[in-house]
Length: 81
Image (cartoon, rainbow, N blue to C red; front, side):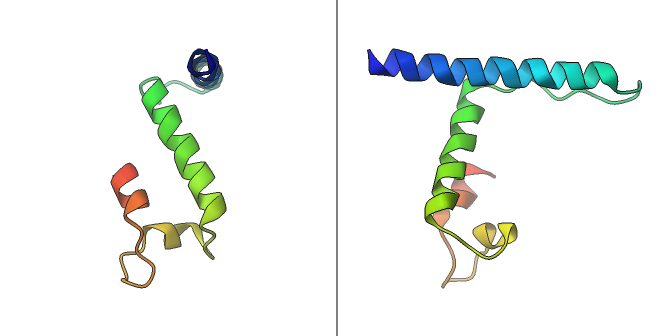
């Protein structure tokens, strides 16, 4: 039962994000190429990265993708290619 509740929340986030994005595109001048709609999988990846960055605090956003041995964490590079 909890899984269905969680899935409904994620689906609602995806639907509202896509609705907002289409409203934004409608307000733009012509010539912009729209991106494809967000999927449930992409939203789950975004939420996972957001939660992980709260636990693994670094100085700058680019520090999460450093490949230096002392800072390297495969989670970020494997999740966002």
